[in-house]
Every structure is written in structure tokens, then in C-alpha cells.
Length: 211
Image (cartoon, rainbow, N blue to C red; front, side, top):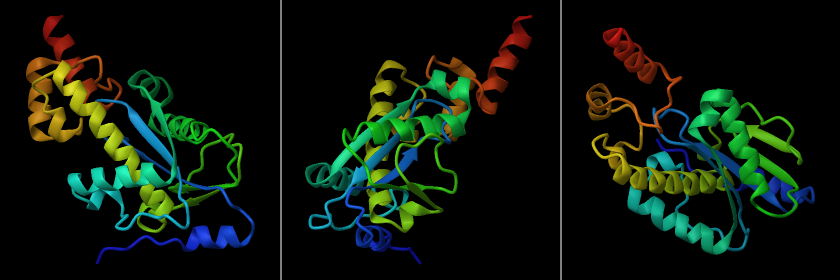
């Protein structure tokens, strides 16, 4: 049974005088290619779009419609961690960096952040609470997951035009069977995460053959 996110966590904070409550989520930790994107969303309690769920259980069309409605009614900030930053920092630290950037992109004070997951980014400039499976529990985090997913999907569709053959317009950089086959036959692009094991293995095999 699908868990429906609600506004109860936000309402508890509102009752304590926290007016600017940002939901924060990321997308792109698992793919073999492309950046990691985080979003921060402050919903207007009087203008919450209907039908907000964890972005992973929504159709692409519904996510795009919801993202448009969120942008029209809420404050939205986006943050990115590049492939280079993912490789340099590791995926967890890159996730936290993108989340901090998303919060900063809101462009104003934040009273409290509701962050998806159990680990909070270090050096946050506002109080925060981590919620495991937050995108299925909090409407603000669900909204952030939708905005981040739609934004990153758009990036991967654009990158697919620059680097055809990997199927990024449909697999969004995840390690699908067709993506793995293309990685073997075409080799990695500058947008592949070379520290991720499947990509590292292809590079190692290519180096072994050439040596």
C-alpha cells in the first residue's frame, strides 16, 4: 500500500512559530552518469498542489505537471553536485553539498529544514530534522523530490543529445542493460562517474587490453 505524504511535520513546526519550512531531497545518487541534483521547497500552506507523492511512484507526465504547479505556488531552490565533485568528495558528501546549495538558492531565511534521510548535511545554517523515507511522509520533501527529479531528467535528456547511444533519455544515467552494453562498446564519456564500480571496471578492462 502506498504511503501518502502529509503536512503533519510542517504543521507541528508551524505551531512552534517556524514559518519558513523547507523540504529537501535529492535525486541522482545511483546513476553511473550525470550530476546529482537537490531541491529545497517551501510550500505555501494555503496553496499546496494536490497529488504530491514520492516522485519515484509518479508517472513522468504527472511529475512534470506537479513540478510546474509547485514552481507556481512555492519557493524553490535547486543545487547541483557535478560529476567531478562526486568523484572528488564521494557520493554522500556530494549529496550534502547539493542540498546546502539548494537551501542557499532559496534566497532568504529558513526557519527549519526537513531533510530526506537520516544524515543531515554538516554546517547547515538553519535547524533541521532528518526524516527517513521523508519523500513518502512529508509533502514538502515530496515536492522537493518531484522538482529535483524533473530537473535532473531534463539535464539527462539534453546530455543524451550530446552523447547518443547510451539511452540517457530513458534510463537517466542509471545502469540499465542497454546503458551497460553501450558503456562496454562506446566507452565512458566525460559525464560518467569513473569512481563508480561498473564504470571503473570498464576503464580497467580497457587499460588492461591496451597494455
